[in-house]
Length: 302
Image (cartoon, rainbow, N blue to C red; front, side, top):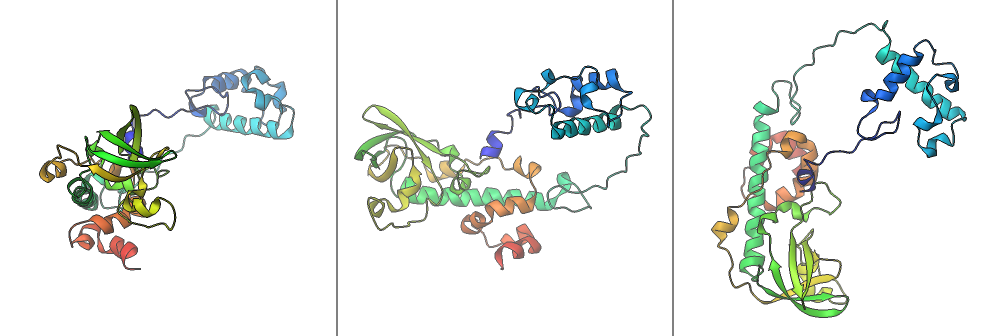
């Protein structure tokens, strides 16, 4: 899923004081230098009189409004921040000791490390994913022969065509494939299809298990394939099945790591994203026990 794939990507930050990249206002060397050069100046003074402060420290879009009252107020706001941060006569406040609180379920009796609800939720996600993969295997891999080496009929802007699936990344098949593309929790499963020597990608999109039938055009034929899509078109059916299909035992042995996401997000946020898919694919009848009565009733007994 996107949020997991981007976990190691460094977030780009920009200082809203000097507008240089790589740091924020709290760690701005320009701000500290300006304070040390002008610590005797009160924030109500005109900032244009401050030593070392000029338009060159701001980008062009800000310097155009350097003389406006809004610009002055903005800089004075920075100066108030500097006084609180750097003034020598500022009294140091004793920090209150925070009560321990679980970031996953909200309990004050434990933290994430000792949270049984977190462990149960990881179990629910893994079992839901197994249920989805089992359904995918039965319908598409075993039932229709989808996989690397399968010959498929496609329908795009140029009409019907035949292509060969050259890449079928089964490890990317997750129940989160069915979430909308804009969701941070969406997972892409890109298949590569060779059509007349040209390699294209087809992504497994949302609602692939729902055979919504449209009233016009090729959607009547596509049915459940309608969300295996790309910019050029869609698969309509398998012409010749994959020659070497994996066994279901092997296929079910692959499972993504959900332990990371429960350390970053709380249960209610994850339920808001996954609840409908958990309900559809969780293969056991103990969901209320695993989720807890309060959470289960909130999402499934309305």
